[in-house]
Image (cartoon, rainbow, N blue to C red):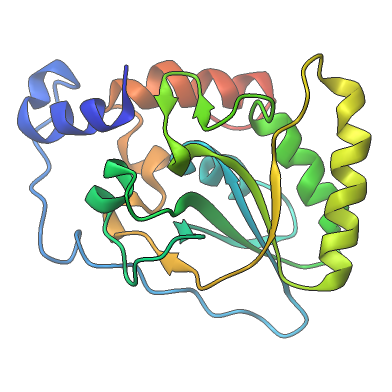
Length: 210
């Protein structure tokens, strides 16, 4: 099921997604989320791997990760909305900005999870989600991250039959997604069929809480 369609069904026909009452979308829900504070000594990784709901749900669970924020990067429109992203005209990728403690989890390990969390061999597609907004991408924040990302990508080739199409690009401005996208899986796993049929199996496969 297309993720945008699943979200529409949740908002317009809640009985098809859940027996629970419909969640009314408030003005606050539709506002861009505020970025959490970044602790001293923390590092940031920005990763695009298809649906940001899926990736955020996984990274939030990892020891050493302070925060995982869904958002947009790599496009030409300032302050893009989810609707603009879905139209595919803004040029942005759906990403998750991961703030982590490098003393507890290295950037290399953050990237190891990245390769496990999606199929980096499908161009602009993850499952039924297709479009440039779902591209596989690593946005590096330093030259050291760039080197590590390139080495990680090279090593990951041995785990995939087809060529990896992940782009490695310098980080641009990060735009946090709307509030209702944050922690989406945990807030909607009993309501949205996309959560049950796409995200939950992925978390199970990786032996993460679901």
